[in-house]
View (cartoon, rainbow, N blue to C red):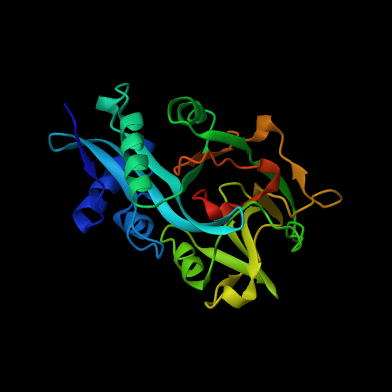
Length: 281
């Protein structure tokens, strides 16, 4: 018998969530109480929305979504990023994730959230699409090349694009488990180190007017990793090329769930989704 409780963000809860996630994913360096506080409580768009499954005093399973704002079909909308999910080894195979997700989306819809978006791998995409009713929007591009990715065509207005202002950007780049570097003039590009030697990841190129903090300049790693989809970027003739599937740890799929009941879906060829928009780096 499980008790389902709404996720809270006090210090004790943050430590408990960090402990479960660190144990399940074997990443104690990443999943610290400070990292969870940053993800769950410090977000200017609002605190996390999610549920825990408790077996007595044991946290059997955990799922959360993270609030943010986006432009969807030309209108500012409040959505959720599907974020952390973990099930204790002793409680797997009992459908807990599906029950937690259903409760999370029901609560989110009641609170005025309009959609959930996320990135799933080969192992999880089936569960999201077949059990939870997500749209499989498409497989994110994964490319590597020299220098910056090609510039965005500012005349292209995407159907979907996350909104980044100075406050949200400062919070996103305050990740206590990562350090970010920048380069550029009018458009500032942000980068992160990767686990691959000589390759840095490109998070976003963004107008300098909303960058109000100083970041170190990028001088490391000649190659650049690009993951995402952008209707305003043309890679033809650039130095960037597709990474063959056999060299990728796993394909990444963009998934989307409408919470309004209006049947909204994404047009994968007309959206803007970048590394800064999810939690890979």
